[in-house]
Image 1 (cartoon, one colour):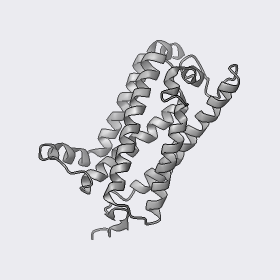
Image 2: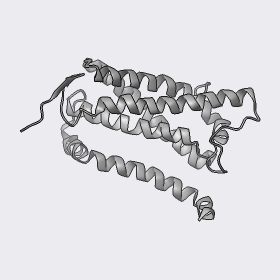
Image 3: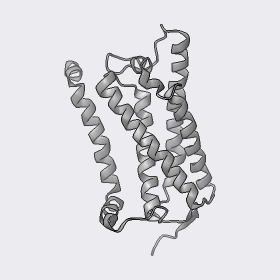
Length: 208
């Protein structure tokens, strides 16, 4: 017997989509907390240059090294302020979906645009942190870890429900992504982890 479909945002949520509100609501809360923590410690660092952030652990895991760079204020203000605003919006959407809210197509497109910007931005920050600043902020990595699946599953939802039209030549690719969504996400995270391990191997090997 087929499981009944649940009415939520955008019409009917299939079993594949049913966890999306939980991802946005609770994943967004985790990202919001991480962004808020970074913002608080960034403000403390601005007030007191001698302040040591809570995640200054070693030469590689060092939030202070990241916070003190121009990359930490790309738009003229601390990056975590963007995270607070963005994740607050994602959390609101997630809990609205859990409450049974429905949204128009334009709303999903707007969410897609916002998350696409976010996922591009966090990958740029990843590159800057690893290959330019050469230091990692654990709270920033939590933000990365929340943005990527949020973008991925909202994108899959939008293709699956025709919010975004699928070009004929890409139907096979989209079908493969829908079928192997978890595998692709795992490879995505593993690629980031392996890049970090490889680049900082000179330090990790001293801990072995």
